[in-house]
Amino acid sequence: MRLGYGLNLEQTQKLMMTPELRQAITILQLSALELSAYVEEQILENPLLEVQEESVDKGEAEPPAEEEKLADEKWDVDWQDYFHDQDDNKVRQERVVLDEKQRFDPFIAAAPTLQEHLLEQLHVQNLSVSLGVAEYIVGNLNDNGCLTLTLEDISREMNVPLETTEEALAVVQTLDPLGVGARNLEECLLLQLPLLPNYPPEFPEFLKHLEDLAAGRLNRIAQVLKLSLSKVQEMADLVRKLDPKPGRSFSGPGDVRYVVPDVVIEEIEGEFIILVNDITVPRLGINKAYREALSHEKESETRKFVDQKLNSAAWLIRSIEQRRLTLYKVANAIVKWQTEFLHYGIRYLKPLTLRDIAEEIGVHESTVSRATSHKYVQTPRGIYEFKFFFANSMGRGHQNDSDITTEGIKLALRDIISSENAKSPYSDQKLADLLKGKAMKISRRTVAKYRDELGIAATTVRKRY
Image (cartoon, rainbow, N blue to C red; front, side, top):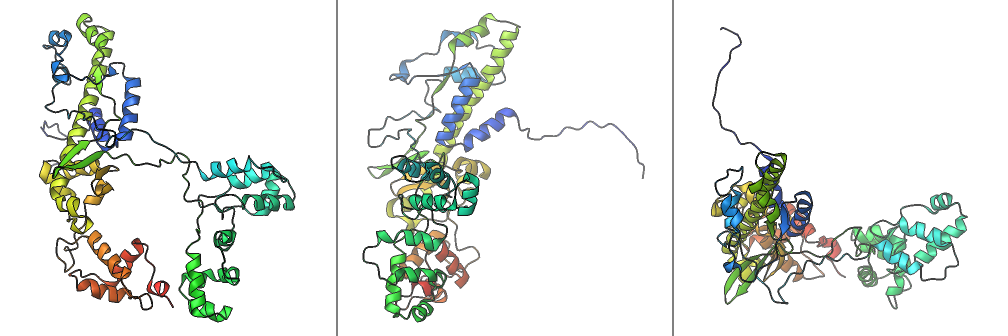
C-alpha cells in the first residue's frame, strides 16, 4: 500500500446553515406573543423596517414607482417580488377583522404574587410588632406559602429577640390566604381550621396522623384515637377541603396568567374556518426613504449599508409570511384528521403523528414539530396545545384497536372509577380487566401510571367506610 499526500478536487453537496435560514427556523418556533416581541426588536435594529398601517382598500394600492426603477438590480434576496406583491393576497393571509366576541386582544395581565398580596395586607395594619421582621418573614416564604427559615435564623439575621420574631410570624399567619407562614403541613392545616365550621374536637389530634392518612391506614388512626371508622372517614373528608399549598394560587414574578391562541378554529355553518391569530404582530414594510437611497447611491458605504439591511428586512418579512402559511397548513391538516373530535369531543380523538401531518403538507417532521412547539389553538372544544392533537395510538405494541389513544383510555378509566362502589373500589388489576373488556388491553402498571396522571388516589385511599 502506498501512503502519501495529494491534492484532489471533489464536488459535493451539503446544507449550509446560513444566518437567514437560522432566523427562519427561529421565527417558526415562536408563539404569537414571542413573535411580536421579536419583531419589535428587529424594528429597533433595522432602520429599513417600518410598521404599515392596515389599509381598508388593499386592492387599489399600487407598487411605488421607485420599485419599478430598481427592477433590473440583483440582490441576495429577490425583494422586488415582495414590493410588487405587498398588496397581493396570493401568499399573505389577509387579516380578518373579528367582531367583539371573537376578537383576541393582546392584553396580558399578571396576577399579584403571594408576597405582594401579603405585604399589601401588612401595610394597612397597625402592627404592634416590627414591620421589618414581618416583611422579612414574607420574603422568605416559598411558592407554596411555607416558611423556609427557622425562627432562630430570622432572629439572628434581623438582630431581634426570638419573642419578637414569634409575634411577627403570628401576625403573618393571620393573613389571607390562611395557612401561609406554616413551617410544616400539620401547622398549615391547623391554621385553616377557621375555614371549617363545627369541625370535630378530635380534628386537631387527627392531623398528627397525616402519614397514615396519606397511606390510607384509617384503621390504625381509628385504633390510636379510639374512634369509629366512620368518624375517621368524616375527618379525612374534612382534610380534603383544606389547601396544603395555600400560596400556589398566586403567580410567580413575571408569570403570565392568560394563554393567547396562535390559531383559532371556528365552526361556521358546519364548516371549520381557520384563522392564524397574528393580530399582535405588526405588519412590516420597507421604509421608502431608504429605498430611494438605492437609486441615488452607487458604489458607496451608504449603498452597502442599505443593501445589507434591505436583504435582512426582506428575509424577516418572508420568514414571517412563511410561518403564517406553515401554521395554516398544519392547522388545516389537523382539522381534516381530527374532525370527529372537533364535532363530538375527546372520545373521538384519533391517533396522529408528526409524520402524518408532514406527509400531508409536504414538509419535514422537524418543521411540523417547530411549527407546533409551545403554541395553542382555540377550538369549539376549548383551548389546547398543538401537541395535544398528536395523540399516541395504543395499537402499537399493545393488543388494542389502532384507533384507541391514551387520552381515550384515560377517559374510560376515569368513567369506570367514577361509577365504582366507594365502599369497595376497584383495584388496579380489576381496572385493567374492565378496560380489557372495552378492547383496551393494558397492564396493571400502566393503569397505575394513568391513574396517577389523572390525580386519582390508590384503592386504599379511595375506599370509604
